[in-house]
Image (tube, rainbow, N blue to C red):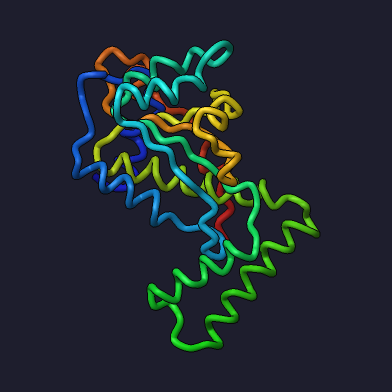
Length: 219
């Protein structure tokens, strides 16, 4: 499929077939999508809780109770569920940890490039921490970049997905001890296979987007 075909094929799946499971090979590809997503200054401010067992999905579904119960079955019926988490803050130890990994991976041809990378990343983090005062929000933006990358990548594998902001992030933080580890839940994405009866498939509920003439300025 072309990119356009893939975009027209994918949609926010509302009804997953509980009897269909993502293969181990595709699961490896999904993990690669999560790990290799771009982020500003390569800060990678994320962690992922992935549930692919009934018990694991029940734990994630604790974030879909009460007001958010409309998402409970989607979590339980999906093959895999990913809780996207963002770092709460970044400190010097984490910055040095990133630098050490980049050096190990051979990203720096010399010491000058290494120090420029380290200094530049700290400058941007400090801008968001002290000047804009939105450091955590900035890191959550990087997590959303990852989510977009993940949704398109999953579709190229022929996998259906549903991003869910309709979850109790505090309940998820508590269930998985995220805040103690320096993270907080941002959103949940369920992955699996659509049912034929899903009302939201594009064949039943056509996609709707604003026209090109309204959203593009081509110079």
